[in-house]
Length: 222
Image (tube, rainbow, N blue to C red; front, side):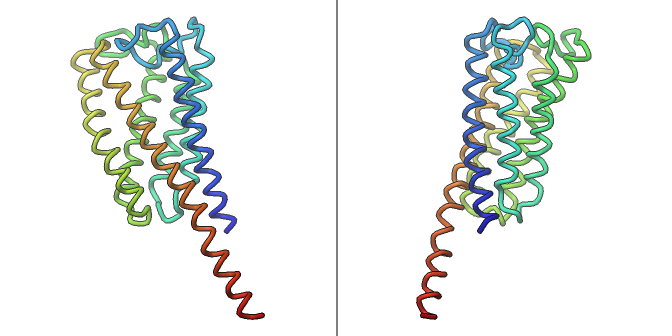
């Protein structure tokens, strides 16, 4: 019972951190001095941006959401928690290491070490979340509802991930990469929320029958 309650609390907290993180990052991207949809989301965290602090708080909240979601998954779901934990570490690194103005990346731009670390961490975090979707999808212990959510998330995220990677290599920074990146991140966030909320509700609703069964047995002994 205690373990089930802990997972319920973790799932609810993951949903709250996810919403808070998405709101904070969105505010930083929309209100900050970045180039809008033609640039990377990470440009909102550049040091000279007035919303860099808001951006980092949002990123760290998203990292916390990944860790909490890993703790909320059923114990029999093996690979997904590890992938989400890896994604959380990469997300923290992405928020802690700031890219330079424009967040330049090869092959079209000259990048600093910080740019490469930040970009690599961001890519690793997103990839870990996408692989976590696949891990949930192929884990029978996750249950039908979570696997359906994972199937939809993976069906959207996999082609988007490929498109972002190809666009970065073939086109470089611009409107195409900017829009694709935002859509991919939105899919990842939606999957996290759609996974966390049922876990919170499911754990809560499962408490009732076990308590009632205990009550019936006590009544029988009386």
